[in-house]
Length: 512
Image (cartoon, rainbow, N blue to C red; front, side, top):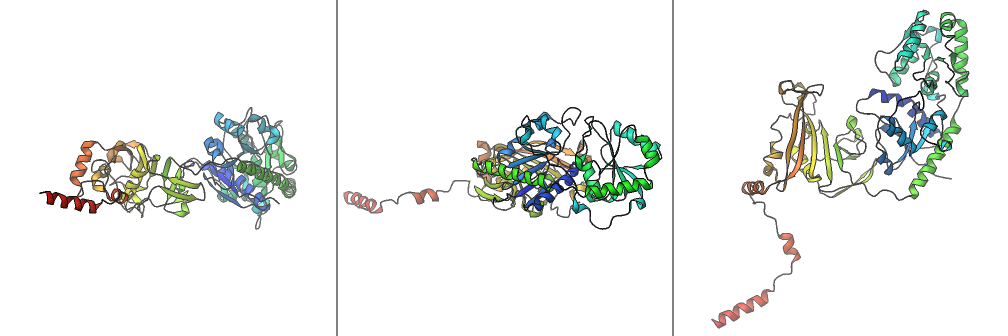
């Protein structure tokens, strides 16, 4: 019997992009099905695991194709592709065409590959973990009809038609996902589903989630909708010609509730376990093929992100002192560091850090938390190659942002960089120092502003070699003059032949 590889579900989220939360529902569904089949499944944001098969949701929001060389990746496409569908980038189509992909609708597949049979297609059907606790009777629910989703002209026109029939259609006034959205779904007599794109592909993820929560779905149906068999009797369908009369005469009647209850009951009978078993077998075969190929050597990163949590950067080495932020490695650069250093990360695997190996270090609102900042800057200088840059963002001294966090230990101003640029010898630096390349003030919205309105500073420091004149200044200022220690050289040398030297001395004395 084959051994199942660990499965990791990665949701891509550009910084602060709330709509990535829309992938929580299908990711949870994948997790449930894989765990039913005995797989170990983890899930996180923007993080890949070196020892697992990674199923990636939302790669159309941005994914570096180079990462496939280091990780086993299967891309989950939930976008409507093809004529009349979503306008995705050419890079995304190229990524799908060169990668392992799983799709929710077979009609998407020809948009990115001619090898149609090589792409597993899995449905999103009943989710029993959502049907828990007591369910409010439909007729007693306070929301008549709920609409969920992005708005465009065609959807707005449909909702206006429904409201013209006397039905109150509720919408969210801001993005809402997860349990916070589900609460309102369960308070609704029904959810209305309308197509966004001209392709009119059925919105399977949204509809299955609502049905699983015990809320009926009324959906428009056009010639291209094409739902699979699980939704034929589980959804209340209305076409364009029926739309007005249905909501004017049938919605909210006793017949509506009878039909809605039957539809919800019908949906619970649909179990996609065989499709997910096939998908898991696909993942096993994919991982086996990858393992037979020569894997990448120990990773030697060139970019470091100090901090994790919301600022995690996929493809960089993410370092943090807090394990709960799920960095690649837990490491305190504010303490003495002996390089080269071998690290073992549960996310990225073995990592080698060597002096002069890093091109960029990014620290967004980090320096104000570090107790020993000179040690951190010394370690960063050692890690950076000559010409390497530190990109820093810090709160400004005197601004309310400077001390709003109880873990702040300092505030910064325009003179906070002098020790690392002009007075480098105070820190024991000699051959290299930092040079300030740029510095701008930012307001609370992170827009450039004057010093008087500044909440933050954005600074770029560059590692440069010191000049002969600067090294002369450093020698003058240092108590040991900065001379190299020859202890190691002496230990490697053969001791002098002192006996011969004494004989020669006696001979000279005798001659005299």
